[in-house]
Image 1 (cartoon, rainbow over the protein chains, first blue to last red):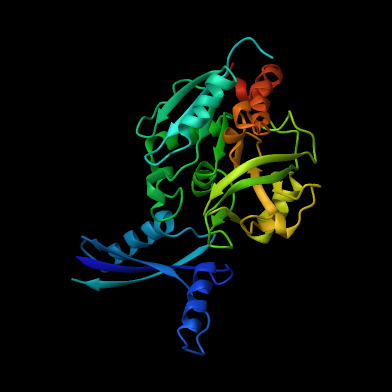
Image 2 (image 1 turned 135 degrees about the vertical axis):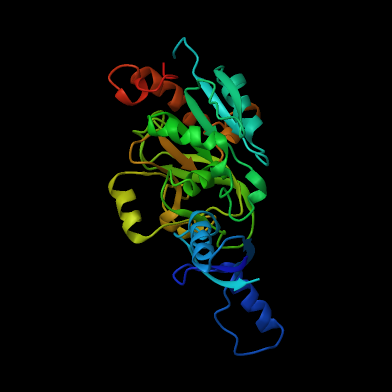
Length: 82
Length: 250
């Protein structure tokens, strides 16, 4: 069994107004020198399968076909044996 | 006008909330036939036109329209569109069409981060589609919008091909029809409010034509979209291979 820890983030070329709003809020906290705030999604799922390669393949497929929209988002994931 | 009524099918996803408005306009304002199409049924009930209505299908979970595209009814809608059937996606319906890959691009969060609900003006960029044949090119229509994610985006190559093929059907504009940034309610690329596929049978738009169709509500510009669709069946019964190949066509 593997635990997939998936991060979906807006692609660099896409303006992230939500990140900008949070950035402004951070500035109003009085904490300086904070830039490039980007918002994203974090998803965890368990893959019950024999090998890491199998878990990787399944996770890739899920990310590509559902969790991320390639026009605007990138995804990254790590696998943890559990 | 034609004597035989066109049969509109309005898809109902959990969270659709403009389905009844669309049904009402088709059935009671334009006196056509209308059916609701439940998302779990892989049956389009022999309709001539499919409407994907506005709302928050599947709670907008993950991304707007992302889950809806996997519903049984959508597989049929995709097949229907491939065979040339007319599909109109309004607001959330537009988002579903993009997620399903039936139209290119995405709808991002509004530039302002706010949900914007107001009347806007859109310019008809292409009046030769089956959804706009009752308009004239450059005509300014007043139709309401109500969305939080309507900020159209695509890569520059796709934008170029949309422009070249006249696939941009509506753009946000000011009263004189100018494409000012101030007239762009959500930050959409090139002021895009609605696009059509290359084949010309699938249209997605953020404005709600069904909310501007009943004279009681004073604004009736949206009606032009529905009347165009109905009218297109008259001019398409002859010499249009697309529609005659699907069984529901008439």
